[in-house]
Image (tube, rainbow, N blue to C red; front, side, top):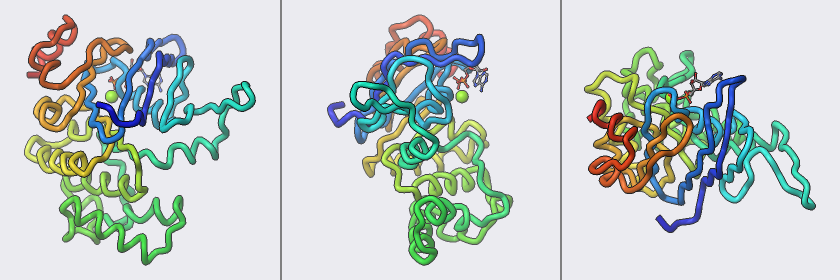
Length: 255
Ligand code: ADP
Ligand code: MG
């Protein structure tokens, strides 16, 4: 990949109390790239995404998101921590989709999608509603504008969650095992939406164990183990001929 770097992690570390979770993660995500992340449970995949999105603060290393040092600013050679407002500004352009859909249960699909643009972007209701309808159409839910989450299948809820993230007009989308909580027959409809998004040029980091998706849609596959990147490369190479013993062991269980 040769596009502009959107995310650059340089030896980042993160601990929770005595638990050293990220132990020097380095990787780059370029504009328009789909970077898939695999690795055993507990290897730090979610923590890494949460650091990129500033839901967690890194302890050491450097994390650059779109030419800005995340959580810090250097001015006249000195390092300043960003305040909450500046962090919110940095975070605003990053969409995140979780394993659990986290929709507002008391709001319709449309209500969920317009909430961010109304409150955070201060769009007017007419524009936000028109944009939300277009996004729900785009994820295949043109007949579900007025449905509440409880009336939707898991796959439909996850597609609303994707539309809701897109409504903030992100330049980067983070997906944390977006299909892991779904019944197998609903996985495909969510992956299809993500595939369309990738084809439209969205920069994406996708934590997933869907090897078919990684192979077909991913530009790069990163394998994490115990808080570090142990292997990365074109998905077909990593999946077809894994070099690291931990990658081999993991893939023998997943494939
Ligand atoms: P993965 O997503 O690869 O399964 P996680 O990033 O969720 O891994 O977790 C990595 C490790 O960090 C786990 O041991 C987990 O228990 C620990 N961890 C994650 N978040 C917290 C937290 N907020 N407080 C304490 N420990 C945490
Ligand atoms: Mg996780």
